[in-house]
Image (cartoon, rainbow, N blue to C red; front, side):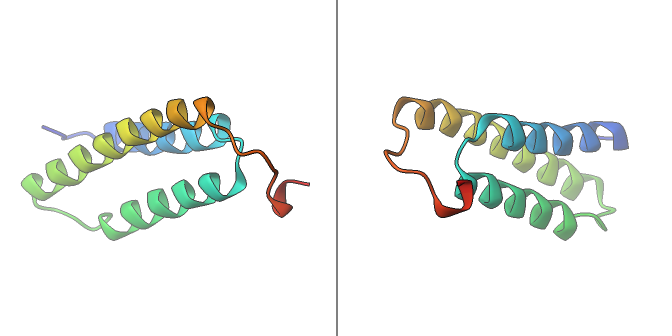
Length: 86
């Protein structure tokens, strides 16, 4: 059960930290940034505790997916750089 604002802020920071430090590819970094911001903006006015818990669980699930995709991406990096990375 999520009842503290600090837990929500920590999951948001974890998502941004993972995006910033682990993705070498511009498109993946920007995609995760957009997804994180959109998700937290969409749910910032939630007051019902069950809805807050659902949103928190969804954010934790997204963090797990993000960490899994980082591992997969490190196994198969792109052969060329994006134009934004030069």
